[in-house]
Image 1 (cartoon, helix red, strand yellow):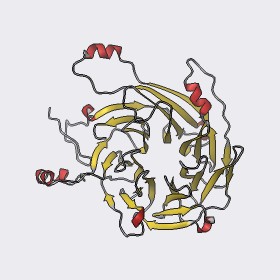
Image 2: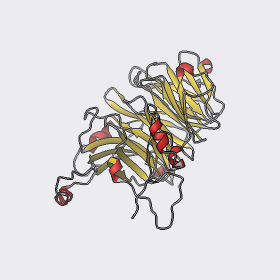
Image 3: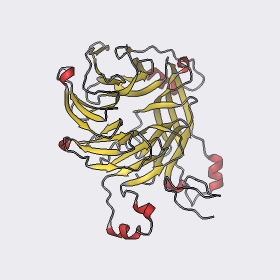
Image 4: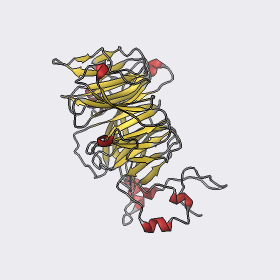
Length: 404
């Protein structure tokens, strides 16, 4: 049987089928949560940074998209015994299989009314607090620390009853954009489908104050928000109006938009702010991924532009430590890994002339991950080197490739 690499977009002939190349992954696991999750976030843990020793453990929080509003939940998850899929050829494979434990998924559920559009988690003092955007038009804050503690207890536990720390109803319409500041504990921004953005501030005593005056400037739905990793008063947003805007919250809300850029030919769905370099990554309904240099933000063109995906971009995120590497996902059921530092050399160019398909692939494209249906969101694990988690209508994948 002939084995060859599949390039997305190509047609399969009779008798051909797509099979995952296990040698391309150091680790690959799947997980199911029942109802699909449109959004999730990785919870930082106390197990150390830059982890590379197997098996791994990961903690996540996700929000469901159930058929009926009252059946939705915030799911706090512990994925453990995430072993490497790479087998040691010198070992006895049969005895290994007999002794090998399966990965384990434990979860705690917090009931919530309405499907969860997006959520983000932040460590605030001794609490892990999740901000949850619901289709009901409300943004809730929940302390999920008790749920995390319950995951460490062996045996059957009573379901936890949790009330939100704070609920904001001022948007009056649903939304998707929400992000915590990594520089100011408890500072949050949320944006809605009516083009408004509100900034939350943690007060003495543990309560939140939300400025009722919206940050205005976008002319259509706000799709994503990212706080600056080094300027505590600055955040970026993107919108269906095709723009990316940079804001300074020290100004009055209706005058706080400092920069605006027409970034895509249609909706800008997602953005990611590089933690080490002055770059913002954007993905749009046009299937294009753009890299913007904030030092040249008013320039007419992005510093890099990639048109590989054949559907709208649904998620983008820079690698947590490598400032040239990023991941993206699209409605074309592809998750791609990229490295801006890679350039095509002359030998590769000459060798690929014979294959127009290969020649059309950007040299910066490192890896294409497939197998999930309708990928909604991805995140790098900030503490497990090179590990990506993605959610789709078909469930979760957690994997590490040989490329990053």
